[in-house]
Image 1 (cartoon, rainbow, N blue to C red):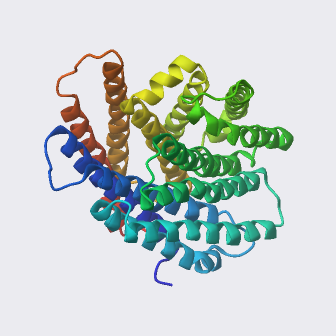
Image 2: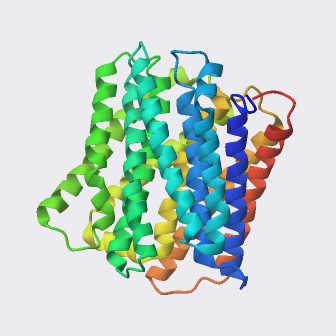
Image 3: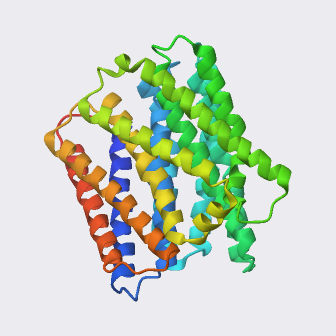
Length: 406
């Protein structure tokens, strides 16, 4: 087997570095000028590659590693063609979207990417059912791959409108938000919570409460989609359902946090870096869930969806602040066998970049909201993009070139 075990994670880390490089180009074009680059097309390549090349690649590998009915080598060998296929489609989207936007090749690769997610869902679901010990985490994993599959409805809908040149802004936005919701709040969230539950199940004996928390998250996940549609006139009963879903999410996360805090002694063996990242990811998820609850207030929802920097800030909060930092925490604790100083330095730089990015995007959104100008803000965001890249470069170099296996 050409790629074995953790080399798949090395590829995922390298892909995140590429995502960051594209972010620098995007920020440079906004701050200065890059006329030969089509901003929207490059943005599509940036986001699709971030989803498929980084998050999905890492999550697939980490979920596969949880299968216990066969040895890790046998499991990875079984899934290697799925992992290869996901990589091929990710790089296909990376190289096609910037040049043609939604065109022939980008649609082919994005469609193939969806089929790979279906393939993974079917095979992984069957293998989970083979596990002799049934865990609460398995419910999270099944929900994650289910939501990953149904998110494709939004992607197919958007691609269809692009190809047919159907101009219906509200419908296209709903399709985009459908895809994003079931990626961010389905595939990413449930995948990460499943990995967290794998850890907590080892020392939390109240499995019934753990399952109830899962049910709360799952029940709220579908109606929570309409949090992204509150800028439209919706029936009162649907609005009420959305409010209830937002409250349920707050309750579910509060109960989960309580369990973690009560059993914090069990996290004492985490290395210092993983512990810090875990706390930061929990803070980011807490902010995300509270923002979703606040967005049920109609006036706040109109403002949030009316200003692009606020939307971008929220998306980065989830993608970088929660999902990426959690994956870093989990991988550094359970997958990497060495933690050289360069990786630690890179992680700290990366964290600083994420925090600065969120602060500046919040300032930009606030400035747009109150119609005042903040000088050099776009230049500052470009500088932050460089900081993020520098941190990831520091992380990648020892991982890729290090002699020790990880």
